[in-house]
Amino acid sequence: MEQKVYKTMKLAGATNIAIGVISLVVGTVTGILLLVTGGRLLARKSNILF
Image (cartoon, rainbow, N blue to C red; front, side):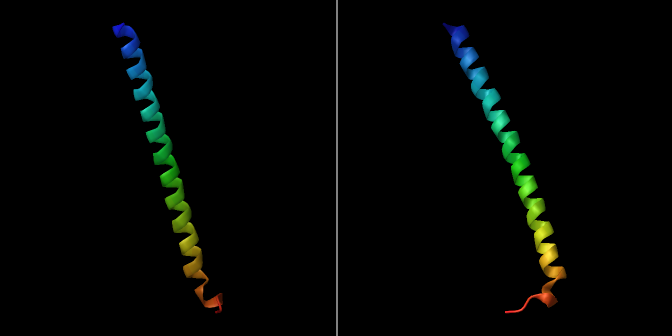
């Protein structure tokens, strides 16, 4: 009985770690893309007309 509990906890822990790593990667990539896009806007701000 205890072995099933430990296997379930192991699976839950591994899943949480995997989701955490994926979230970290997605957040980093999103931040980089936002910085690049903002830099392009600042570089071309004289060409933007309202």
